[in-house]
Length: 243
Image 1 (cartoon, rainbow, N blue to C red):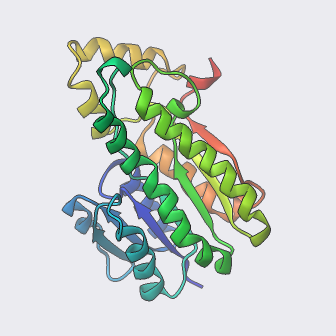
Image 2: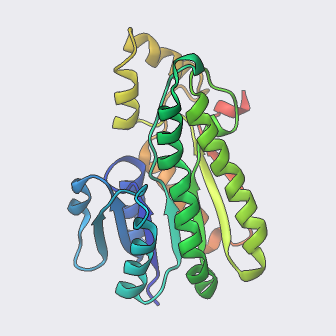
Image 3: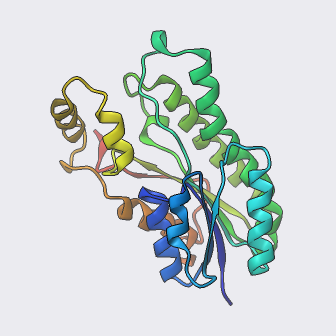
């Protein structure tokens, strides 16, 4: 039996590595990203790329339908797409707030709502990408932290509501991950090298995680090896929240 998955934010970083690992595990995948670079993942019908904005109203339903039409079933939803914003509250506008929730929270809710009936039939699962920012206070991330906190609570809520129907719902909470996502955020700092040193100092292992380390955690939470786990927020953070 071939399993199938939907992965959002799939063009680079964590999402790309998730697609690669799922494909290696025998999954067929619909890989979604706003960037046309997602097309690079196409692989002989095993990985079907879709260039789409997860925040658009039609996207969640269209993506889930594509997966079920292409593959006949849906076993896994990985809600990974997100935007980052580092800005203190007094410099954060209403537009900033609305835009981040529109990308980071509403699509997670809407993709889950579209996928859950199919996941109940396959006894599948959802893995959401949260963040340490949704678990502890991090300076100058007020709105981003709020969006990731919402994902943490949505994960727990859906886990409780859908457990009786055989659907597991978990999340990973990465710390700093060595991706272009972080490079872009740090480039705005007056002293990027000093900023990097602070970041590394906050992670007891002394380095950022790799995208593949987070991807492996996501694939584990989707696998039979984690069959007894639901409603869990798995920190992949080099010890950040253990300090």
